[in-house]
Amino acid sequence: MGNWVVNEGLSIFVILVWLGLNAFLFWWYYKVYDVPVKFYYSRELLGSALAWARAPAACLNFNCLLILLPVCRNLLSFLRGSSACCSTRIRRQLDRNLTFHKMVAWMIALHTAIHTVAHLFNVERCVEARVEAKGTIQAALSDLGDKPNESYLNFVRKNFPNPEGGLYVAFTYLAGLSGVIITLALILIITSSTKTIRRSYFEVFWYTHHLFVIFFIGLVIHGAGRIVRGQTAESLKVHDPKICAKNFTQWGKISSCPVPQFAGNPPMTWKWVVVPMILYFFERLVRFWRSQQKVVITKVVNHPFKTFELQMMKKGFKMEVGQYIFVQCPTVSHLEWHPFTLTSAPEEDYFSIHIRIVGDWTEGLSSACGCDKQEFQEAWKLPKILVDGPFGTASEDVFSYETVMLVGAGIGVTPFASVLKSVWYKYCNDATNLRLKKIYFYWLCRDTHAFEWFADLLQSLENQMQERDNAEFLSYNIYLTGWDESQATHFTVHHDEEKDVITGLKQKTLYGRPNWENEFKTIASQHSSSRVGVFLCGPEALAETLNKQCINNSAADPRGVHFIFNKENF
Image (cartoon, rainbow, N blue to C red):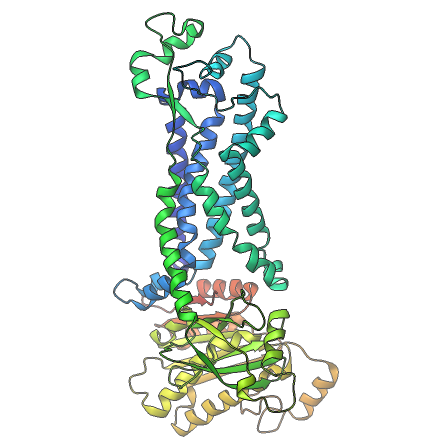
């Protein structure tokens, strides 16, 4: 249990607090509508569905307050960079912003479903009370408002039977129509956010996600119709519903039971969401202003494995290792922004990204940059590029540890290119103040060509560390996870050569996948009283494996070794 707390404690604490607040709000607002005498007649008309509709509505307001905060990237980057308000543990929670965003979205979906189902029962009972419930208290309550000086309780004012009555409410009332619209928007947003859609049809995900604007507008105006009504305080002074409910046929005829008066609840949602909406509005303003600053493409480099590199310059651009930017190319699309990890180091006078061609947008950008042409591309022919960022990630904390494990899978090696370049520059200048003393670098790739563009950097580092008599500083392991029979024969023939046949490095390429349990145990034995930062940019399955190993191999004793897991999310 101690190891689990070290690695995931604060995250679990945040989740438990969030779940606890949801549970408390649900319970509190359920009681607000299920107990007070103010809603006695509302409950007579609607039954328990009233409380079942209002309790999830409160939770919806709370979660809609939270949903925008994790995607305010400039705010999160500011908090990450402020040591005064963010310790390392808190920064690690900020790195889980998208995970929390998804959890809140699913909670919104859950409460939307409960709220919608409860209101379907409410509408059905209101329509039936208006049409069919003759001679009952429900009919008496529904008839209120038909005469002068009366206020209504039943918001259904037309005598349409179901299902026509339900459809009439859904498409002619503000609450009904806005509810239908925001529910459809939510369904489209969530269904298009699945991993399959995001990876294969990013444009669908991108465009439908912007339905959140319609969702929030509909959410704010949803309660403006005030269809949830309760007895007024003045009426309660002269009309006790617990007594007068038994004499509903005598309302207005006896002095102790005058006709009850009702009023709608004022809309409350805007009070919950106005602050995050304003924050997000300014977030978008900052992004727009920053994206309009001129970006110059200084170099386009074609790399193997359908990968190309853009080197760019922008006035006032400052970055840290492992950060990422959002890129738009109007030549390809005027609306789409795509995230890319920076592969350059802060010490370089340009910033760069490596892009793998895996879809329509990246293929369009590749063509616009002339990557499909053999001849030299003139600078003036290069497309206009808009850049928003940089934004902080977990990799920024690499230099906070004395020992780190960097694990990249495929193109996921890009944030560590920035880290290793920065290390190289620091060693070229003055590494005496460098807290980082040992790097264990792992790169897993399924194709031999993918290694080529990164091998030069590793070779430079390898030579630099040997010249400085510090070859032990960087321990790297490159794993080839896919090969055919002819390649295997070639590897076997050249295995005894001084340099590796694939990378040209002295460190030989390994075949297959790492035995992570052995790797962690070996590192734990060599750094028995250290905090080891484990940084991953790769798939979820590998993240689960590494996180489990971090937990299992961390010591229960606070003075022992502790593996701290960090994963890139953007």
